Length: 332
Image (tube, rainbow, N blue to C red; front, top):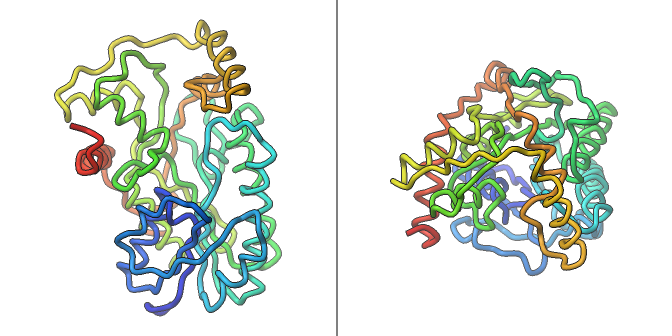
């Protein structure tokens, strides 16, 4: 593949998509990014990239955005842990993704990299790191987002089986600069750094630098096998360990009150009912608490062996996230 080739990146106004677009531009590709009307464009300010209008609910946007592109990175997704309208999320994450990838094939795109998530994968029952082949059980896909990403990945795999050149990547929990929303994990890190996290439910997660995830996307384009999925993860941490790390970096006390899950369920149910009335995202829901019962630990061994993927320690990701939050005036 030649540097200078035109690449389309969807979701580049978001956290991961912006990092992917930056990585591709630094590697010498010509980058076109997509944005919906009214999108927050702060993540695009340092990109010398053409912006194409694209809404995954509007297939008429696809052909103009894809015109002349040799490769596609489909990063865009509806990522929310709670949604008032599950059908709308599924329409974007499943129907929109399939339609866009089909349009890419029709437009002559040679290879597409589809950004799935570890949320689409199975979990090891004993809490050990899962991989791309860990058996998936219905109980692993709690909540609308996880269910939609699992179904979307299966649909994308089906397209690859018909002969379309698609590589799938499964990022874990990205952390780092450019988290403008911020993401649920970014908000949690910010709250802990501000000393606004008095208590927590201890669970396990895999923390990875967002720029390593972006580098993994490029490696998937260059070296990935068609139809294969690759976990782009970093370091497994218990939530208590993550908060202790943030405390060391900020000089604040780590939250010391670890809450049991079962007694919180009635409160989470009430919060969800209130959210259904107000439309405001609840602090917690029964599904979020159910997810916390599972350790989201993952192995990136396959990506390391086949792609040359080399993530840095989680501490570097958290440090860069805190530096960026300070630079943006979000953290004194």
